[in-house]
Length: 311
Length: 184
Image 1 (cartoon, each protein chain N blue to C red):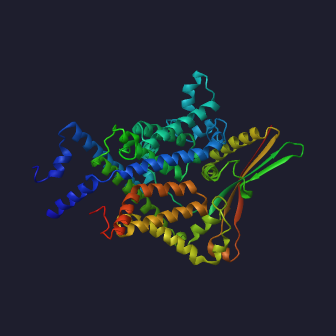
Image 2: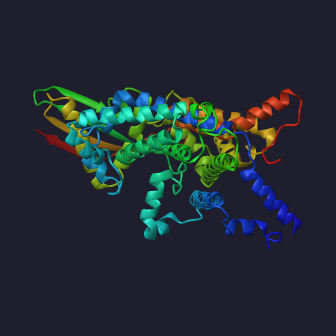
Image 3: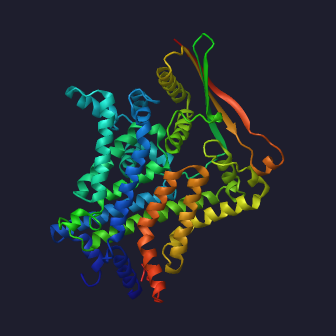
């Protein structure tokens, strides 16, 4: 019975004992910065993507999704009586998205701007279902968390001006834990499911990914001469992803695991051309575990016992 | 009772609005994490769940993707879908675009071009999607090139050899699965 009570106490402590709120501030800064970077990259092609006469016209993109989703066209219909045409509307929407993300980045009226940024991103995703891929999904998850988490507690003007209490509390700890657990689940699933495919063990998936035109960045046909290298990279990927949920919680492994994850996603960016996807995965891992990893590094420098989350 | 089962007591009995709020947050968080785990770890059969709870799942996905299963290159990525477009003006002038020859849908950077991977996959999902996407893309390109009067839009599937077969000299298998032509 004591063991049970001890276990419950540890469980409660893990989820609610106040810890540093720095990860929440870091998460907000990184994700809001990412939104602005993505928006800057999107801007030159904005009209071709979201315009009413873009590659996928509004009527068609609306038909691709559930009817209850809020589409850009639905908002435009509301604004049209004010004399705004569809061309002006999409740039107005872009402006609102950028202003919201800037407000989120600065941490002024943080919750309000977090909701606005999430809402704009939701409308974008439901308006462009054919263009959505992993980067958007993880960005949407992050924006949802920023909307509900106490993300203004650190590195924000709200906290600086005393509008938000920067002291750690149960809610900030719970928020950090949820982000950490979500990432562990996502990576475990990603790694474990790869292990179910013989193609992954043999390196074929990686090989085909780097040679197909959609992802090919360099002439990598020489890899066929070193099949063991492709297999090794495949195994590395599966290992790092599957056991992320262990590596990130063991203080002596955390720094190396985080660096390995960063290496993996830099590789995805460089060799598959998925720069923003690689970047957001790095930012999420750094937000969730980077602060603890940094504490581990500092503890090594001081020749102290590495700090552990679980302790 | 409080001494014997303090955690259960604390969960069940709200005392103040603040503790009530805290309990609601705990319940929602537990539900959220359980749902994420159940979907990601395939404890819920998506097909069966979608039969009776399609709308709630779709709403949750729209809100936070908690009911979303990540693919992460787990399915076969050995195939690619390519687009080939030929614009003509009837007087011998032709413009040819092919994704196999580096056509990136007139985008300005790699990140915008990446989005067309999803576009091609979505479009190739069924005959209605292909038709709609092809018509839309043809309209876009005819607007970009107003001097052109005829457009041919072709989609090809390519299957790439695996490592062992490639070493034996196997080539990619190509096949056209969709073709449409419009004239003004």
